[in-house]
Length: 311
Image: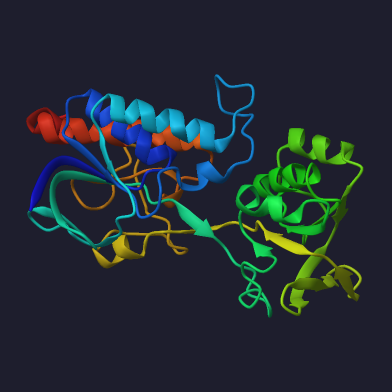
């Protein structure tokens, strides 16, 4: 069994930041990531609201974070899935490859994309239905696409696709977008982008590939069909907290891990940071801040337990 002082589960913005702060404080630090490092950040086509960068892609930002982490001695193990935790007495992390012992644990597993749950979505997954514009946009060059959603992710996806696809429709179930005003202004400038207000997708249809969607206007009650070559779903996220719940970590009614102002969970020496927590703002900047707080507090817990418990 490998022993580490600090184990971080997840290598997104929060996890990588926690790793950086953990290693710089002198802790023997390991990051375990089920996929490749980056989390949802790596899928961002462009980031314009991260301090210090006028504009940067998610891939570029993640690359810089990974390089910074490894420079200070963090070990990042990718393509290794955490399958369970044991948090009573000695803390253990069980993966599909190994069993680890840790003095403190930070959970930074982020979220996964919420699905529409309509007929045809599963059938046409990878055949016109996508949840990642930067991954799949090249397949839709000069094609017609539909983006579903009304937040920042949907707006950014529509803007990105407007430079690649011939036409972009953005369907939103309400009469106003939730996206930042700066993004809304940019959308309005795009001649090949049209917003379908008060509109939801009821079905995705096609043959071997997506050919059309059935739309419903919740204001007029009308049903219509829209020919399209691709559907990009951007309607929010679901927290990756199932394994944490099984270990006794408390979550809210929708599955986000409950933390206090120091990112502590209900289990001593176990923290959570980033999109997986019940903090209200889900942004790269807030994930970085939460990762910083979690690692700093974990250092106090591990190295200065007397002051920590009596501070």
